[in-house]
Image (cartoon, rainbow, N blue to C red; front, side, top):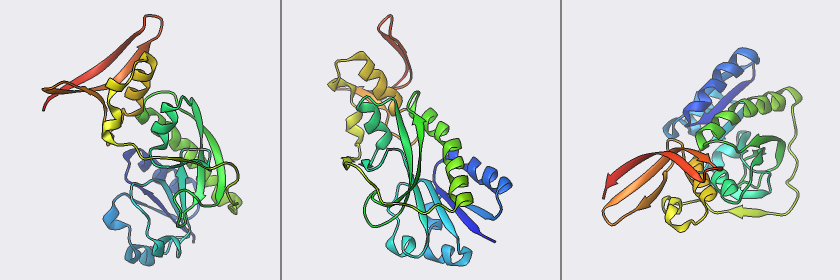
Amino acid sequence: MNKYIILSEKSWHKSLLNNLGENNSGNWILIDSKDNFNLDVLKAFNPTKIFIPHWSYIIPSEIYENYECIVFHMTDLPFGRGGSPLQNLIERGFTKTKISAIKVEQGLDTGDIYLKEELSLNGTAREIFERSVSIVEQMIRKIIKEDITPVPQAGEITEFKRRKPDDGNLAVLSDLEKVYDFIRMLDCEGYPHAFIETSEFKIEFTNANFQSNKKIIDANVRIFKK
């Protein structure tokens, strides 16, 4: 029997285990913590493939050299290699992207590609991540069913830099639609929210609604004393 691992620390990927486990042959487990992702665990389970919808840590070479690891990156690779793909795309004005399923290797997002599928970038970061789950599920099914062999990336290489918390400062913006994009692209647990600061307070924004005809943004606000 084939064995598969879903590797993700994000709560919205838990449904993948149930859906794929019920409808695919094979034995499936979910690993959602760094402590449980190590050679001892992998040797004991001996997975056929490791599917990685979201992982914030570097995967050691002793793992990807011994097990087929497939990561799902939210750009049309080789465009957009690197960190914070969702935020970098929205900041650049993209309204849609592709999820690229790639084989993990030494380089950052440089691996061979199994397949790509389109993804809308409308809504908050959380909504986009949740929308991607069903797409990733179908990609996993296709990789297994068709036993896809990955092919090298082709095209012009563009690299993204991982965003820092200070990059969410709204004070640098002058366009209202850009303000809306900043708020929504950082609106997800685990991400530093868009903010402005005074000498005494930090003010964070979430759940934004852009009324373009009135040139108004409604949003939830949290105010912190420095």
